[in-house]
Amino acid sequence: MEILKKILKIFINKYFLITVAFIVWMVFFDSNNVFTRAKLQDNLDDLQQEKHFYLDEIRKDSALTHRLLTDSTELERVAREKYLMKKNNEDIYLVLDTTSDKQK
Image (cartoon, rainbow, N blue to C red; front, side, top):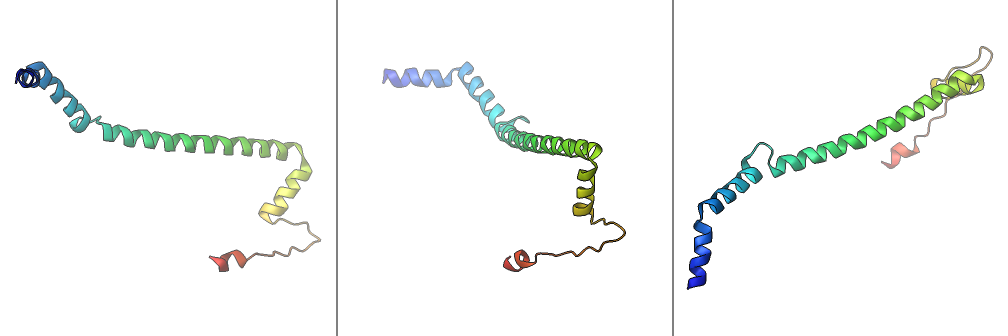
């Protein structure tokens, strides 16, 4: 019975009650609660992944730009493949692969 009284005395203590109330408030009701912080952390992780993706794309594009500015054959290759440009005395035949569209 004395053990029960000691435990009850601890739980009725005003400092304990205030501490528990503070923890409950911070975890559930505050504007920076645990759930909001978790969502913000997920959002931050997604944004960091996007940042790394775009930095990699910038590196690739910078390398391609450097190659295009220094090598005329690379410039001609990209113009022919990507933008379908041609010389005056030649014809272009464009072959499209439609088998991947039918399988979907």
